[in-house]
Image (cartoon, rainbow, N blue to C red):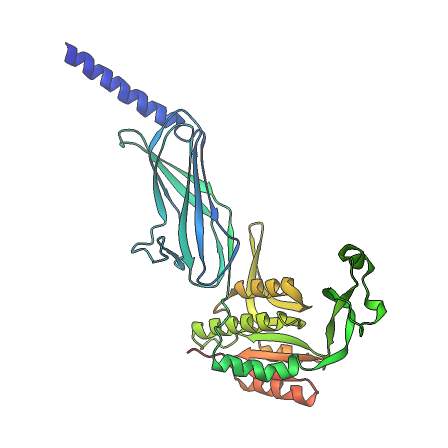
Length: 353
């Protein structure tokens, strides 16, 4: 008789826990994931942040969360060594009214734009004989900028040739609208440069520093119409753009950017493809815009001919640097015609070491 009663009690408990999990398993349950940074460079280490919330009295002993991650994400250990299995899932046991947070380090090996879209949460009851599933929408975009190329003999030689055209040709007179900072007054400074507010604060004569006016401006033009070139050669061209942009913007040059490659951005849930033209600008904000454009370039997509863009150029006050592995007759003819129109231009062929 006692065994019958015990069996009945156990059966009742099993039915109650099964009914309770079936009705309440997702009540107060929330899952969120995101990146520790919004922008990184290729090869940088960052974290995937996960948060699981169980805001009810019912504990969840078996919670398995899985979502799809790009193959370019390589999870690493504390010593930044790659893990043998790149598992895009997590197993949790979470008690009632509890929040669990985890940080999983990883490295993104390739430039691009990455989004977290959804995660599937699977929950089992205490006896692990019933499973319940729910999808959670995730929000988060990661921009992976191309990493500038390391300095080498070829890069140094390239800078020497371009510096003469981009940096050396400057006017002697400073630009009164290009303010760079303050310094102490010297006897040779004109009185119109005295900053009286700064002088009152510092209790000594201070003058404004103005940047010199560049006689010519730089435009980087990235040509990606060579569909037969290896993908890595295109990536090297993109990295070379980032290298040149960083070098000259950090030296106060005014720089613009144009590519016939397809770039994409996302407005709400609509993906928009477009070619990119970045107007002339300077400073850290211009470098950020350049890197963002380079990160959003979609590889291996049919591009309009760069010759069409070259044939429209008329500004002789700008230096054009074309980065192109494509050397078709139309491109060569358009490039050679620039000299006849008095436009200074350079053609750089990206390389793979």
